[in-house]
Image (cartoon, rainbow, N blue to C red; front, side, top):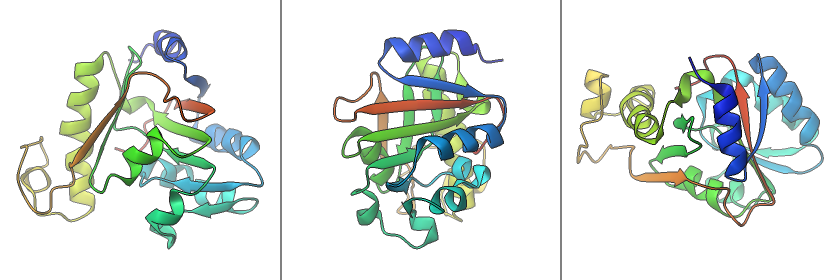
Length: 196
């Protein structure tokens, strides 16, 4: 069971804004109220898909998501970027693993506002556990979803640190503090299991 109070305190000490919601529906409504009349990009995220956020924000924003036909290059030019995390440590580190690098790059630099929407299933007690989760839970599930022929996708149990040409784990980012380029980086915590 995640210690949301400890997590919130540690994230805020690291410069992140934090909001917390009991349900995905409440989190989606909050984001809808915060983001209006601007350009928004989504990172590849099952969490965002489960929130059904794309049609909600598209009503009053220009939203780019490569899963919906936009390009990764277009996504880098937006004011707002929304994604999730593969692992979030109660000690405050945000961890993501990426294949192309677009998602990790976009969370570090180039957008005025960045939002991480994170379900309770992605929270781990410390950095090592969050990194383990990103590599051994999130990555194999994503490789399976994408139909990759990698040991983690075939076995579905852990990272094999493979050298497969279909490997999706090619870049790792750890945010120890809020990156200096963005005006605002917010972690939207949801007390439900979301995504991988």
